[in-house]
Image (cartoon, rainbow, N blue to C red; front, side):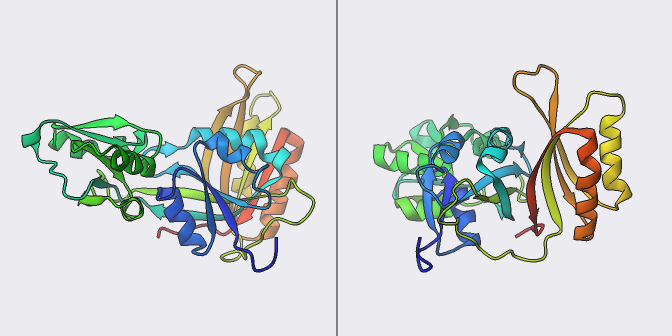
Length: 293
């Protein structure tokens, strides 16, 4: 890849998705490569070498995106995954239809397509408009593309403003989400699985003050308390902890944590103290904590 070539970013979802919006917020000039599923995104890393990937990891209303946590754990060591940046993106849901479409209740039921999480975040809208029937689809932007291609006058979609612009849809109602404090947290990932040429690099957006890691503990009483106590003693703020089952080992768990640290020496010391009590530890890197956009 030449120095002047644009950086490519893999996203899950169609062009016009919220992942696309978030990617452009981080790197406006990046080439966006859409992937149908989370697994497809990780698989395409071998096809589109020396790319970055932007993944949704958590939503402020719906919670963790379990599939991406599982794929991160499964592939982190093999792909040498590192988090370059964290980004918090405001999610604004819009009711979109073909221009000129009448979505009034006079015409009967309206099928409203979108991703299941997007539909779940608009429950109040559907409760107030019972003639609107939610229909699950694989992607928000993909639902806009589909309803415009099918040209059914009683179909609509819920997606971003960018999706409406990209596919030629008309926004019938803006901001139909239940809660305006609707944010998705994204990780911009870099993969170091290929020795040459090196993956594209972007500068950090500030001094690192946050780290993420997976770890599993030796099976003895008090192990988790001891591990979490390390962060506390070093004045590190544990902002997230999640347990994930370990495949092939029933009732055993891998822990995922996000931790804010006051200085890099504290992060180094925490890692050193954790290693002796862990069976496995996967360091996903250090980065600048994002603020609400």
